[in-house]
Each structure stands twice: as C-alpha cells, then as structure tokens.
Amino acid sequence: MNVIIRFLLSGVAVMLTAYLLPGVDVQDYWAALLVAVLISLSNVIIKPILVVLTIPITIISLGLFLLVINGIIILMVDSLVDGFEVDGFWWALGFSLILSVFNSLFSDLTKEKK
Image 1: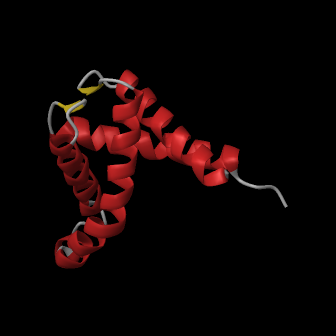
Image 2 (image 1 turned 90 degrees about the vertical axis):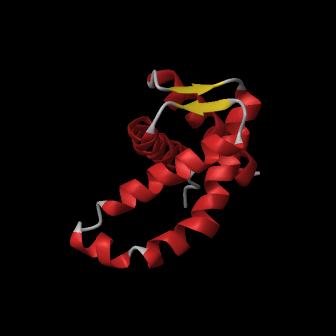
C-alpha cells in the first residue's frame, strides 16, 4: 500500500514542479505518472551506466557532473512522453532539483513510524 501512495505522490510532485517552472509543461496527471515511472526506471537502469562512464569528469567536478546526468535523464524522458515538455537543459536541471526536494518531502510524510 505504501508503494502505491509513494507512486501517486511522485505524480503529484511532477505536477507541482511543472506548475512552479514556466519552462516545463505537463499535460495531465496521467502524463505526470508516466513521467514519474520513466524517471524512476531511468534512474535504476540508465543512470548507473552514465555514472560509470563519466567517473573522471565527475571526480574533476567534485560530483557536480551528476547534476548534468540528471538533466540529461529528464530530457530523455521528455522525448519519450508526449504530454511532458521541457524547454531546454537548464529547465531540465531545475526540474530535477525541485523534483528531488518534493520527493524527499513526500518520502518523509510516508515514512513508517517505529
């Protein structure tokens, strides 16, 4: 049950982030859910490959290149989902930063108490 709630809250986070950023547009909640799923799958499958391939530049930039990888993943999801539009790399970077803040806040709300 907690997984379903987190999934739905991820869609809400995508919608809220798109509302805050004028360079990002989400057509409806179903598109937001699809974006949330594709970002999660990309973070599990594609991101580790990109991180390994860019270890030298990540070390030189003291880890800041990981933000670039997050922006690239957002742009890849943009190309896959019809109801999701990002105007450029900088909007994708801002989207990934704000989305991570919303997801961490929602994660704290859904955390089970011991």
